[in-house]
Image (cartoon, rainbow, N blue to C red; front, side, top):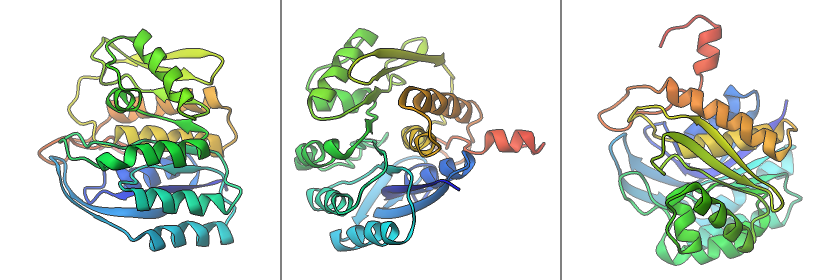
Length: 268
């Protein structure tokens, strides 16, 4: 069985972070493992607090897994400080890592800063060179390139700028653009592609970015090429949003196992 490692923060509400990544991996037929970078105090309404793990513990989690298990893909999510970023880079630098998908988690939906202001440069300098794919949303892409994004054309310009920062391939996610279709821009340094899906009217979108990036990692682990992995991940996350769960009083989670439930004849 193929395996994938999530290096990310824990979401106590179960909709994002490590929990979303593991659900996604398993739903797509990949065995998931985790290196926890932080524990968050959060529910569907907001993030209240964050407690980082020590760099030594994060580094140790990654190294011990690579010492023991063949890992076919890595997804990196929330790494909120320079010491944690350095620990992840050092740990992956001691092994021959498989494809790495980096989701540059910066700010939560409720506005809580999940990447400290002084850590953005370290994220770019230390982790972009290790990543096969970087998957920012509109707001993260704007922060990375320092310009506003209002159109799909500007998404393409931002994608090229992100490659100039050291990324190999990039997906700029357009769900926050506000257009009728949820369009993502996919760029491998040679070719731009636009992936469109229907706009789904729902407030229950907690964890969509984590779910998408881990779906890309899962499909890379399964042996799909870049464009096919991203296309399949887009289809998966669109279905998860369409079947999102009205759990909690804020933004509920996507339904990671919607397809498996349907095939088993199980109602939500």
